Length: 112
Image 1 (cartoon, rainbow, N blue to C red):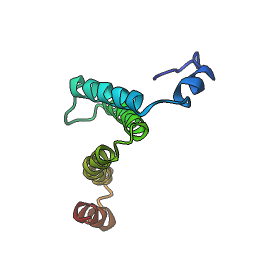
Image 2: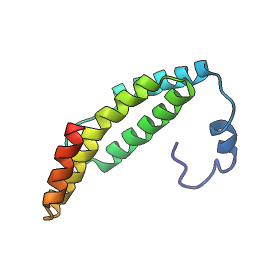
Image 3: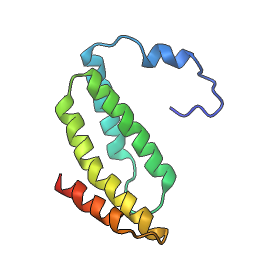
Image 4: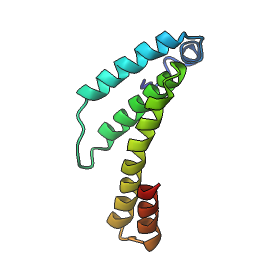
């Protein structure tokens, strides 16, 4: 949820830190998965798009945790591991800092 002006403030804590049933978390996780499916994804430097997707993906992981759906969390992290490592290596390369350590890190992460 974006709240640049802190309109929600402390009221959000009641919602995000409240007690929920696992079925509630499951329903939220499924809805967030549907939202991610409809959001644009792709290559390029659309930082806002990537930030929105990352934010919703993080909320989905929280909801999956509340729903005790840990296998799905691990699958999300496994997919994210490769993307994050690629982003790191691309950032090093784009900045002219294509270092051997970044390349080694990429290889190690892919082999884990």
